[in-house]
Picture 1 (cartoon, rainbow, N blue to C red):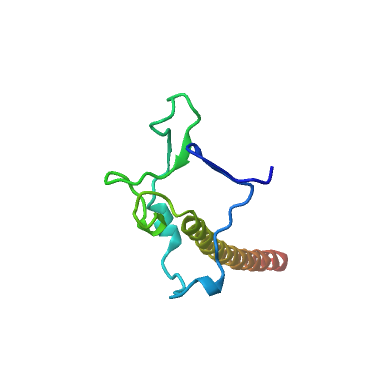
Picture 2 (tube, helix red, strand yellow):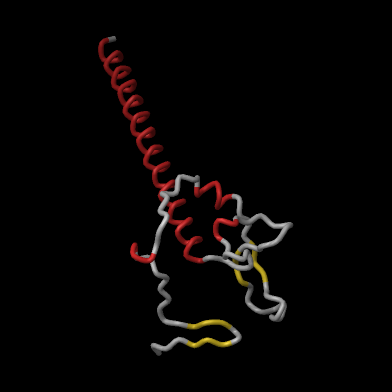
Length: 130
C-alpha cells in the first residue's frame, strides 16, 4: 500500500526521500577526504537489538561506542544513530574512488600487455631471421 506506518517497531514507507535541493543547503564543500579510508575504518557487525530474541534475524551495521570502530562522519548530530544519507553518499564516493583505481589499473595492464606483445613480436622476428 502507499501509506507510511510509524510504530514503536519502526517506520515502514514505500518511499523515503531526504531533501537534497540546492535551495535547502548551504556551506558547500566538495569532499576531498578519502572515503575508502573512512569506510575501511568502520567495523561492520551482525547483531540483535536488546529488545529482540537471540534467535531473531540479525541486523547488519556498525556499532557506536567507545570500544568500536565507527566514523562520526556518518553518525547523527547527537552521535546516537546513523545518518543514512551521509553514509550512502560516503559509499558513493568510495565507489567513485574505486572506479578511478580500477581504470588506472586497467590502463597499466594494457600498457604491460602492449609491451609484452612488442617483446614477443621482436622474439618471433629474431627467430625467423635465424
